Length: 169
Image 1 (tube, rainbow, N blue to C red):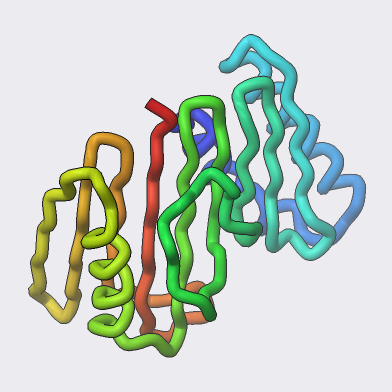
Image 2 (cartoon, helix red, strand yellow; image 1 turned 90 degrees about the vertical axis):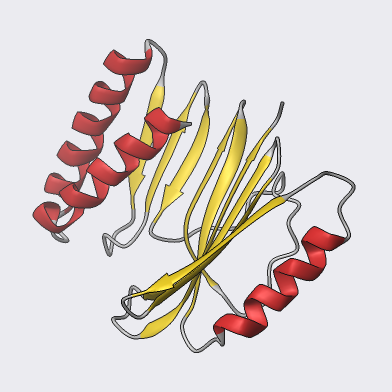
């Protein structure tokens, strides 16, 4: 899953260089596929959306979407509605998702997620911090990590970002 994340972030850097030109887009996709295949030893399929806003990667180890997508089905955390999925990864080992809430209240999102954590049979450790205008609340168990923090959203405004990682162990 870490390899998919690294590759996806590298691909997001390629998007502005490719522009809207179909030939450049195809070259970027093939170059990314070759790089992933060399690193993973398996097959890879990379699709950069026509507007350059989304990159989808499919390998033998799983799939990843950067710049959008859906919350993976294997994520069972009850996330608040109204968020924008920034990235999602689903692999054999687990899944992760990053969701931003442009006009959300930090305390409301923390309360929603705290209710979900409290209802779980697993033991969760909580962590809270703040400073420099940033608030952070996190919970972790043996298989799940949840982080909520104030952030600058992809549209440039202030909001709340939620990150969830769940392993299949």
